[in-house]
Length: 390
Image (cartoon, rainbow, N blue to C red):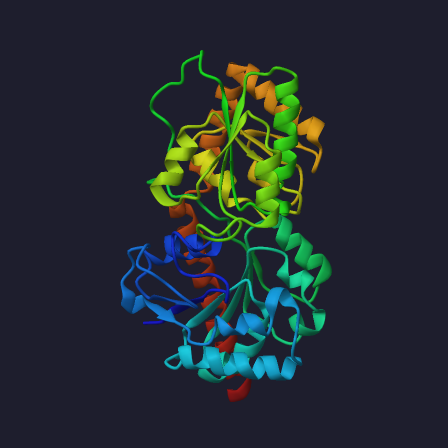
């Protein structure tokens, strides 16, 4: 039976608590696909997946020292040689027909392509952000994946414009776990002060500072609203950075910072809110947290950039200009004071989640991509054999 090896980045532990969006995506696909193996720099049992299907890639964490944030500290020939040895050991039993599904790392694809081709396997590169266009074209031209998978049409279009030589591309959206993220069954009282939730990594590109300024502006306007901030500077319950410390110092009195959480505790945080805010200051590829908010039937205020308009293409939210405090405050203020609008957008958000972003839908589309590329491989081999025999 052909297997799929999901290879995480050197910075992504396979963990519900310490991992990020890639770990969540992989866990929610792999848990229902028996012939899959996860390769990661570290892992724990928080995803409740049989340990025989998880491999720790020795040396992968150390690779961060050589290539932190894409800053190449050694010549590519040396980096590729190091990666080939590290990853090759983890894929010692790779066979013909297997698939190596690499998450977010063009350098991993470059290092592994020779091994994949020798073994008669397939190479997929799954882009969760803009790495394919941010990394050197010298790197991205030096290998050819059998399929490039993108989490949004925004990322796919960006790649096809800047890397026009890509042959097979697919869009595979993220999802949200309906067992953790689901609507609150207890109606909120009209007397309750509306709560807006910011749940994300606490880094500048996620726009926490914009959110705090907007909430301060609403406080000055005496709008009945309060905000809750949940998250950490990195994956897991990481230590506060200078940015986080400064944000906590500057936060207005209508903001409460809560500790990092994941899993069911995070789902509870979503259900205790009335509005979700994602004021990203960068080209957010899709916004997994927005999908989780939609699964909880929360109306969303997000920036009109990256893949976020795509996420809300069926309704469910209000889009505002990136880094615009007045626009963000206005949108939050409207939702805080208009209960009927909140209810309508909440229904749109939940209906869109049900139609497009459940993990059942994601897994079905994942299988279609694997099967269609496998069929193409068979046709190509048959065509090549026909040419030779004639």
